[in-house]
Image 1 (tube, rainbow, N blue to C red):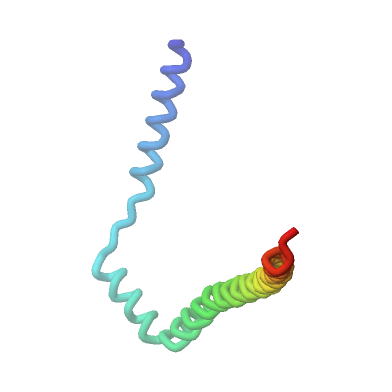
Image 2: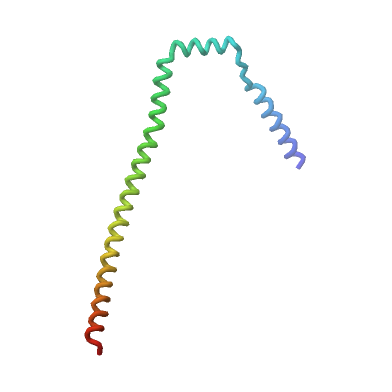
Length: 108
């Protein structure tokens, strides 16, 4: 138990040290340097951003079209099944109506 607590303390100390080392200080010089690079290469960055956006949007569109196609196919299948069931029910209803009419005309 004591060994586990000791290892937890060591792990906590290591993570704190890493967090302290990873601090990034932004100075006005760094900001100016970034802005000058951005001014020089803004066309390249704009094209790259545009390509990344297209690369993200196109798969979503393909997925949406594929999903709509699958839904349309299922709707067609359900429509044909419903049509077939209604035709069967209509035939049964016609037979029952004929039986009722024949029973009314010729009661035995």
